[in-house]
Amino acid sequence: MRPSRVLRKLRSGQTAIALKLNLADPRISEMAARFSGVDCLWTDMEHVPNDFSVVERQIWAAKAYDVDVLVRVARGSYSDMIRPLEMDAAGIMVPHIMNLADAKQVIHYTKFHPVGRRPLDGGNADGAYCNLDLAEYMKQANDQRFNVLQIEDPEPLPELEAIIALPGLDMIFFGPGDFSQGIGAPGEWDQPQLKETRENIARLAQKHGKYAGTVGSIANLNDLTAMGYRFISVGADAVGFSQYLSGIAKGISHSTESVSADSIYGSTTS
Image (cartoon, rainbow, N blue to C red; front, side):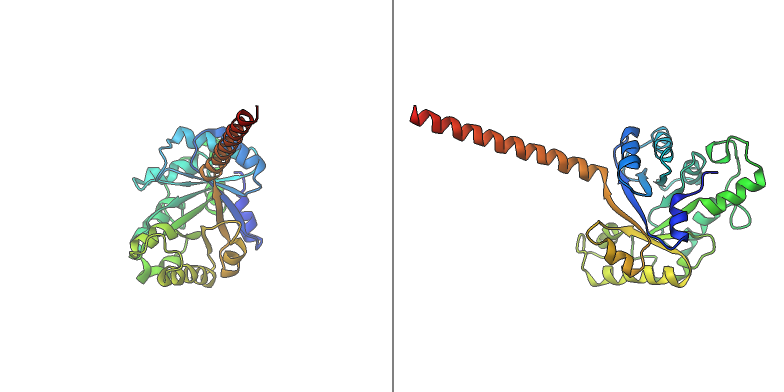
């Protein structure tokens, strides 16, 4: 089983950097893996209309450059959580963990014995298509594949420490966007409860030997690392591409205005 680049960095005390993908073309994944310098590409099945065939091609493109793929799954059946792992995604992210029981169920379905009861196959990419010894497959999967549970609502806060302390949980991920909406302050990133929760998640993760992740940017990367976050998503393909196109639009507009001004000036002096 291909070792996880994210886990390798985290276990050596380093910070792992991710880039979110909204665009489905696997060539975007290949370019991101090849040129961005990130450790992980985070692709989405919660908000983005990706299907599993798209995700599979994204995984192929990324792992050719030793870059992990993390798949945020849609909340559905247990199969929605394990299929990305069997396609050789390094990890899955499960959104909107609402309570301790919810977190326990996710771990139950995403870790093999003796931690959980993940459904067993081994005949896919992660198990080398039945060419990896079964016991070794289960051992490596528990060690080299990671689950990420998202805290993005106020409801689980009373059980937050118990959730983070669960055996088999690899990473807890704070989602400030939905959290801000859940506390009635959408988009207010300096709202006191939001700031307190962000800090508590990092502190409790360190206390219980787990990794904390969140979204950020290059600008606040050092601040989040100092807070205790070790997995940080610093940007998105859709943002980069749209900003690039907006720059072209501004350039065209500026050039057009210049040409128009030159034409007017020339007509008045001829």
